[in-house]
Amino acid sequence: MEKRYLDSLPEPKDIQAVVLMGGLGSRLGERTKSCPKTLTEVGGTAFFDYQLKIMKAYGFRRFLFLVGYKGEMVERHYGDGGKYGVEISYSYDGGKALGTGGAVHKAYGLLQDDFLLIYGDSFMDIDYRETIYRYFCAKLSGHRALMTVMENRGRLDASNVVYEDGKIILYDKSVRTKRMRYIDYGVGMYDKTLFQTGNAQELPEEKEFDLAVLQNRLSIEGKLAAQEVTNRFYEIGTPASLEEFRLYAKQRFCQAGRAVFFDRDGVVNEIVFRDETEQLDSPLKEGEVKFMDGVAQAMRKLQEAGYYLFIVTNQPAAAKGKVRLADLYQVNTYICKRLAGEGVRIDGVEICPHYPGHPKEPEGNCGINAKKDGAKSGNEKFLLCVCQCRKPKTGMIDALARRFSIDREHSWMVGDSYTDILAGKGAGLKTAFLGNYKCDICKRLGEGKPDLLCGSVEDFANRILS
Image (cartoon, rainbow, N blue to C red; front, side):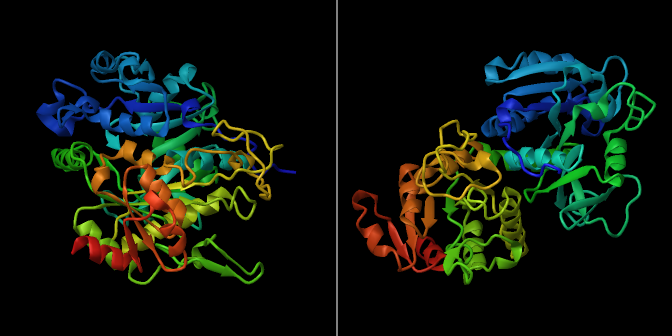
């Protein structure tokens, strides 16, 4: 019988991140005559330094740079990665440009069995833990690679993916159709054997080829899995797009910004009542999501006032065996897309899918033995562990603060549970408690009591913006 569940999941520190850096950058004119595109100066630092910061924040430590044009300058700048706290090795195209696929093929001997692939001239902030999870899940059902996709409907660049019901039906850069509403985002994962020398079934005969050729073939064969993402990407292929990223980087990395960290269930969306168990629960599928009254309007006001908007949510349903982790990720993606349709940009989402389970369960990715808590064991047993992200711990807030420059003193945690308040206080944020049902509990927290008691997100927004 086909195995359908993962026994364990690699952490980002165990995954090799391969970076394509061989482009000429000719559209940037004078800027790339003296340096490769990836080293283009943005705010006093090299462009790829920003992406490296994001990758490090997610835990990646092993990098392979595929360099071509002025590749020796890249190696002089980054060296072995020691000064950045990572390990970097290099593969050179040689005297001839090999294309994206050819560059990976040439580096075959340096590749890990399964590797992440990104572009050195793009800034891509997504949940890379979800990427790793979805890739290894997909391998269990015969997929050979994963592509991240974003619904763009022709925005930013031409759509090139037919993505329906969670599956890539077709990826094609050369022949566009009306069914294409998504774009290849630029982050992928691959089985190394796809690039094996002599693998005539998958590789083109020529050594110089675009990765899109392989991706197209895999999509037609039904072997290209997908992860839908919602954060927009930035690329620096033209002077205009470079300037756009320059402004974005200045705001995000060079200035400490105010933020609101929202709990999700009971704050952003309604809690679900399940007739079969007669209990309140989180929405476990898209159709169960219903937003609280006035949430979108209130978030939009906060965003217009300059606040970052984050969601930090405990979601143990997969660990408890109710659903799969993929379902929890999908609900978050759906919420972000729905809010985007209301003019609200969620800048980041952190999910804690862990739960402390039975002592006989294996260690989870957090590296601490699970403890007895009466939880029903799910099939994805790597989720059963004691972690540092489950509220009232501050791990999810801290993770976002590593990727954004946050003014914690003037930022807020908004929730409907004392665990939200404790997490916010522990992270150095102001706190607001929503609702009337648990106020007595919060009032007994002593020094940990919330700074504000509010009836709703709308009430909270009106009070701090007045």
